[in-house]
Image (cartoon, rainbow, N blue to C red; front, side):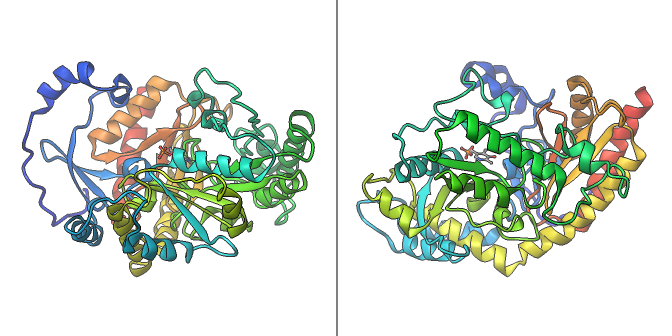
Length: 455
Ligand code: PMP
């Protein structure tokens, strides 16, 4: 049973699902209809729940692709937005407004070290674009960032295999990588589980660092590297975690080659990992530039780049702003999100609920051949589905889709991703409860059992 919820959604008004579906192909980006076999047509949300147009309730484990950080239509965030909307919507950056000052101060206060200057954007792509621009201006290169070249996931790179001046280092993957699985994940002390090398001395970690060094040596101008960008835990990649110590060593190599280090916190930031407010802190490193979006606005379209006064000073030459970045309503929303995260101990909740979720998912891994790997931190969790545990062959797409469809029909919306599209991505609004976890586990267990019985 899904936990009780006292919130009563309003009745859906407007076209019914059938009439929308009959016109959808003509009006909308066709990519929007490649997901569930039977599309979910959602009209209302409250905290961790969504309602479709028939007012069937779903538990949302994907949070609008990790954007809805503190809960759908969180009352405190709604109130802040409403208050600001009645005062002032937009000015352009020619005139400053009080909210942008208040919010900028509150946001940079969340950062350690010398990360003190913020630039507001409207999305994560824009934030990363700006970060690369900063690195290039700060370094030796021209200014023509083309972000698709930065994304390592082949499924998202379309016809631009290399980008301009971008190179990929291998993302350490303890389950599928050429080194991690052999050296660490299957260590005799903990068969199939986490690396047990002494802290900071992970053998696989060193091999990935060597591979990064090869990329620098053979493919980049010596001493003239612009920047290095990485997530502490891969988001779209399926919650693949970097081994302890990797970023520290990688940052050293990059800095030795004249580059700056960018932390992409679009998915990992704002307490989601439980252990730390920012993903980079979990790796014990200090980036030069941090990019964020998604959870920053609880679903409101906004993003930001935070950097040091030194890098910001080099940016002064490139008068950089955009029309909507730092918009008054966005700033009010961002402030409210920061306040809710603190007031409701969201980071602590991610740690506790995340640990429990992982423990319960581990049980499913022990019960079902199809659950190859469970990984992640806090409420950023990946479940990799395989044909069988021994071969680790990714579960064929139709079988993944069928399990996924079943979980949806039973009332749980899960994310999907990973290099082979065979990972369940569990990144719910950070207000879910232990009872929600129990419900999710029961639904996944039923779906996995149904799948096993078909064999
Ligand atoms: N960085 C990461 C880690 C992301 O997951 C995404 C979006 N999936 C982006 C950047 C791009 O963000 P946006 O979609 O807001 O442009």
